[in-house]
Length: 163
Image 1 (cartoon, rainbow, N blue to C red):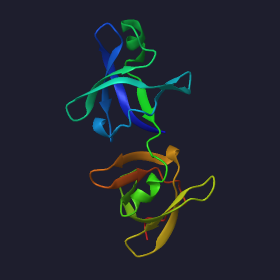
Image 2: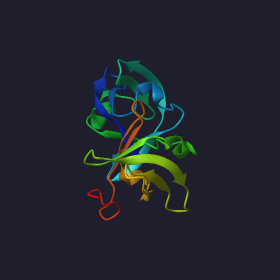
Image 3: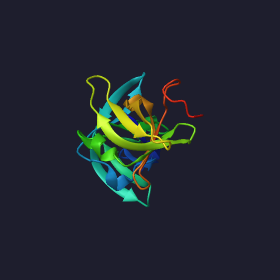
Image 4: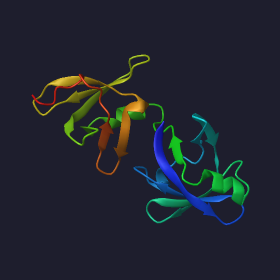
């Protein structure tokens, strides 16, 4: 899952929340899919009952099960996660720039390989060499659709970026 937003605060007395979105624009959210908030380390799904964008990166929302000011206040400050990629959306990453978590460009995504239990991206480095990079949701740092940049926390030893 990808961290897509943060609950900033409650709004009103009937459980409405103000969310601030990160690398995903509010209008890009699939309102039919659940978002998740962790409780005791476990992701709990919530569905949108209402969603009103406010500016470029915020929205007033109502989530299932959040009915009061007390419920909303309990969620203030919590991270909001989503299963960001739809099925087959990985192929849409071809042509994107891949960066390591330190911001260093690794190369360009040239293909997606769906190895069961271990999906990977083929990335062409600036020297023309192609490398296979694991592509797991736990490795995703950020996704910037506007610039076509995917940032991953690439495990040590996968790349030798000093060559």
